[in-house]
Length: 549
Figure 1: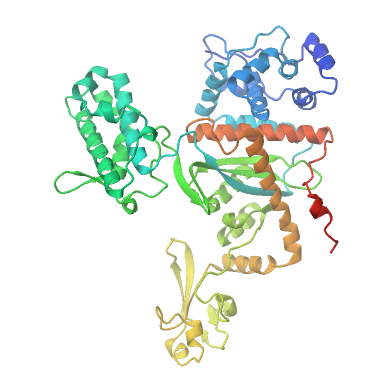
Figure 2 (figure 1 turned 30 degrees about the horizontal axis):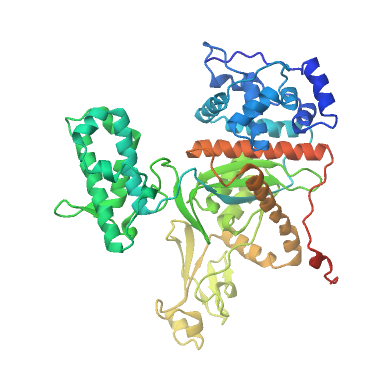
């Protein structure tokens, strides 16, 4: 299938006449076409198609259909029907009224090409470029970022269900690819044990019985793997994805004792969450916990502008493994925004995104002021009068003075347990031993004298300043604007299903989120250009009667 540019740049006269008559006040699709013009052209997607072959349906139109599809929360079938039957969509797509559109499967094929070429960002950026041309988006100002969990398009399984389903998936794959070979090597009991899905099992309740079933499944899986990997077996059987998943899962969930028996691993002996498989059908999904939320899936970070006098547009979307902490996303967001000239002057973040190194890096590398609550001191002395903040640090002379006037110059550069640079300062035993407040200052169970660990000077001073200002009313008033990003996440969850994957895999989920953000931006551009006010926060009748002050 080839791409041959040829989509019309103008709305056909008859389509325009009928659309105006049917929608005298316009619709989202009509207004977006009138305000922003042609958002996507076929030439922008030329690299996705070969130069020869049967002509494909216009990729520029398919890109707009994909965004409108997410704006209205439509599945592929309904989106294709909207192209075929809705006048406002034909208007936005510059189509004749008699154009029959395309089969709904074309959308899935188009998304596959977008994922393969990592071209979802192109669609997202074209919407932002249109906002730039309208003067609705520019670098500088303020931005805010937050994340939320995303549930994978799988059923969550416990460990026992997971190994049963993984073996069942491998057997089904072999039954489809090599039925004769599997019939010859399969244990007759497998047809009773693994023909039904894992969730249909009546699993035993006792721990001993569950372990016994797990080890029986492990032995069956090991038997299958040994047969597949014998020299006599066809080599291509080993390359089946389901067999590869089975092999990896068995390494993670089982071990062999001295007698060669398959044993069920203790949960503490399993790999960490960042590496452990949780489903045989989507190997990129990971299990994660954040406060009271537990989920199998991914995590998405949304960044939007929040400068007064402009619409709040999503400028960055980042989809990650669910186990990646928020702090690792901060620099990625800044790097990507810098590449597209969309860096803010001030970035509002919650505690999970901000620490000393990020504050310094953002200021020195990008000229960004990070505003957010910095985590407090968690050392054993943090709540006493001898917390680290009570010590005076002379960075130039490399000396530290304690609250009782004792000074030390025992200063050395070191690395923390995470491998980051720190400064370790130790006071003399001769000063600490006779000190009357030694028990309040020194953790006597682990140290003979007080030791202080400092971050490098720039980070230390940045943290001290941040902790000092975040208690002021002016800071709280400025930081209050960050709460708006939670409203954006709520909008994306309720209108577009942000927290539920439509597809398998991280790349397809990233595309889903890029299209979601593009759809949100189109809606907000439309609201801004039509002077539609933002919805106010609802106030209950009782709250409205609250006395002033």
